[in-house]
Length: 192
Ligand code: AMP
Image (tube, rainbow, N blue to C red):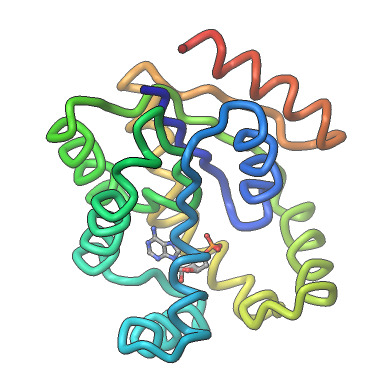
């Protein structure tokens, strides 16, 4: 199995590069942000809970997030046979540990963590642009600032966690989409 975690700050290009990974490796793509936004659209109980956190730029609590991910993995076990692209998960050390356990129970593990590294001023620029184009409610300056703060406090420490596991691939996230993907592909193929 080829299990890829696409990792980086909000606006680093995780969604865009996930599309490239899907068309190259034909793996199941799980974006926890998409799962949550879909629940918000459908007005489910989970969506109502999630909306309160997302609109403030905060993370959904780990226990809830881990159980959501476990049910998606179970529901889509057939599609996940060749592997999974995890987009937006894990975002905390407890989530990373839970993912390791979940995958071990399924006889597998994370193959490579693609870390998209982009300077902060560029992230803000991209997120504001996306807010104008897509109308995503959390892409406004106030929420962007708290999401970046949350990223630095809770998510950035995952880099050291995965460096210690020997599976972190640092990718310069500045440049053309194609050029960045060429670097990603090299990193993934080296770990396959
Ligand atoms: P994203 O689309 O990945 O940028 O996620 C949008 C929002 O969904 C985040 O700002 C969080 O509020 C929430 N979210 C997505 N994934 C997670 C996660 N793994 N843990 C906690 N909250 C998450």
